[in-house]
Amino acid sequence: MLEELRITGLGVIVDTTLPLTGGMNVITGETGAGKTMVVTGLGLLFGGRADAGRVRAEPGRAVVEGRLRLDGRVAEAVHARITDAGGEPDEDGSVLLSRTVTVEGRSRAHLGGRSMPVSMLGEVGEQVVAVHGQSDQLRLLRPAEQRAALDRFAGPEHEKLLDATREAYTQWRRLVDDLADRRRNARERHQEADLLRLGLDEITRVDPQPGEDDELKAEAQRLEHAEGLRTAAQLAHQCVAGGLEATDDTPDASTLLGTARRTLEAQTGTDPALGELAARLEEAATLVADVSVELSTYLAGLDADPARLQVLYERRAALRALTRKYADDVDGVIAWADRARTRLADLDTSDELLDELDREASRLAGEVAEVAGRLSASRQEAAVRFAEQVTVELAGLAMPHARVEVAVLPRPAGRAEPTLPVNGVEVGVGPDGGDEVELRLLAHPGAPSLPLQRGASGGELSRVMLAIEVVFAGSGGPPTLVFDEVDAGVGGQAAVEIGRRLARLARSHQVLVVTHLPQVAAFADRHLVVAKDTGGAVTTSGVRVVEDTERARELARMLAGLPDSDLGIAHAEELLVVAARERRP
Image (cartoon, rainbow, N blue to C red; front, top):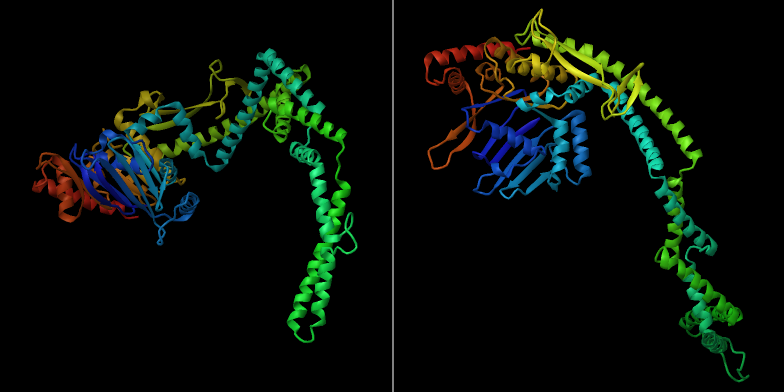
């Protein structure tokens, strides 16, 4: 859950801290006091879009900080992601996160003690918090959002089926697009293929080998300086081993080392230290002998053949002709040839290949149609369960005669999407299958079944939204739920029922509610009031926890606008008693 939220320099809030608890947290206050800034701060903390216009001119930046304490699978996933990104949870397992926005619009994020991209806050937010406001109600009116809501409810097996549909659709469309491109741009492909073949033919004739240019350069350099190398090697060989022009009385290095070793060995009995030096001279003599042999081999292999040098010149010229056209060195030329062969396969527009691709596209189309049919059947099954559960919740929200239907319909063909026969019907198919999903409301017996956007009033839509969230909560989801005035347009018994449902949600989730309704606020485990101060030249707001008599006064203010009214306070205390009784399991 979110244990604490601190907001600085955002809107009318100068600096305030919200101590939150598990269960149901309610945030109330006069209109314009800054309740919306609390939800805005939550949005910023979890990667939402920054609006520099909401940042206070003094101190010139808004800062939102929070502390998360998680458990179970959510904790494992979040902690692992933070660790991978270079951050780390605190020793007690909690996670600190913050977001800073300046008046110039610059934004920074910190998570687990490290600076992070803002998108990381968004990744964490998706797993730990779900924000529901009136804008979410509007989103729920869109067909795509209704389909997404049903898919979310349907469960993990359905999600696997949805992933399989997306994967099959992506493969099919990629192949169809490739096939169309080969046919549409056949002339350009032929021209490019001809140029690649010319290059490959030239490279094949020369047949360059990896690293060949460096090897040829080194060999040519040896041949060009063969006489100088021979003279140096001969002189060195004469010095270490004698021979060639050496006279009998000219000692070589090996002879001198042998004499020195024997001289020292003769004195070993007198001083053992000379014996150690004699052994080292023996090692030196062995090394000199090895060098002598290698110099002999070098001299025997040293070639000064002018014909060979000419061959090298011609070969290097052929390689330079390739490197001028295709790459900086021979290895680059070889790599160019490999890429060209791969590209030639991509450019193939032969009738044989096109026929083969046609057959593969037909096979993949059948696979998409088959998996889309199974996805549609899964949606039909989930739609019945979803409608039943939402209808049950509506009965508890003072809509006892209302019923929700979830229609899963074939997507009409003829739009921009491709069409396929799914379950025997030509439908438009996309990555999410070939269905359209529509939530419908029957407000009372005898009323027509109408889409939500046509059949629900503002208050009814708020209750349908809450009923859907209660159903979702039973199947998991983020541990923290935020409701921003989703009870707008509701009053009376319906308001009490909304409070009761939110309290029920709070048994398994942390719930944060921004509300104007005392009937809802009475169910809170913790009641926070946003109060504004207009005593100075600038209006500011702060947040405080209210308890006992203060809480009754706040509810009286919400009921009648009279926090000091004895009748209002009595009514508020009655609400609190009823809510406390209802909150008991």
